[in-house]
Length: 309
Image 1 (tube, rainbow, N blue to C red):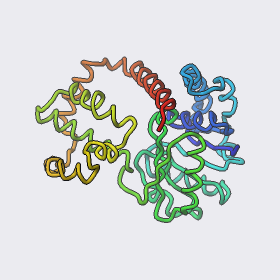
Image 2: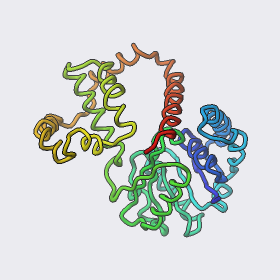
Image 3: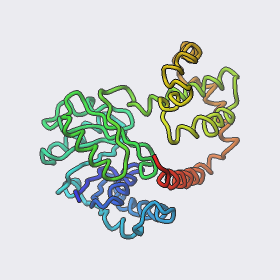
Image 4: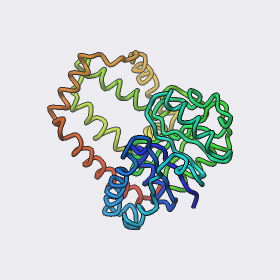
């Protein structure tokens, strides 16, 4: 199995280490912050134990975690790696500096991928000699439970680098999707932004409460969207498929989008939503509720794994 280098040992870096290690890859992880790389092993072991208990991995946490080693230096982390997954701070100047070091240290055949949530590869790889092997591999948090990963190259990214990354991600159990060009925020964030903004608008305009907007998604849209995308959903929502759906509902849906002006997250509405959420969940209980979310995602992953596609 190819060696994987994980640069950045935070929340996403530790999750990527688990994704690659559970698929059998040896992983080296490094972080410039003092003590961060060592602390990550506690997180990895604990999360792997959860996955084993849920039946999502057959090997024990100890066996999988043994494939992950902490590197003392960046050079040690990169030594022998076939793929580098970078997980540094979301600041373009940091990305530029990091990728300049990665490009200088790694052989020409090594793919350099960033987990950035919204910075396009063109913003931090343009001046690199090896810019053709650089791309974004944007995961969904947490990637060991939510498998989608967006592969987004810069205009100069070699399609072969994207193809190699897609094969790798397929092989480790992720679901890679390829963007044909860069867009602001990438595709998943754009889809999420549209829904979240509309939720804020509905609260702002006094149409519905925060709790009931959430219910519309988790007890309505989300049930279908957990196994179908929006295009398949509408294809099945009219006897004649997509064309029939558009003929029936196009004027209504198109008219709605005309009302959806850009939303800038005004402070009074953000305060109202925050108060509603803190009334439902105390600030100090967020971590516990996040763990509950992960257990629910594990149960959903087990269910989906057992179902025919």
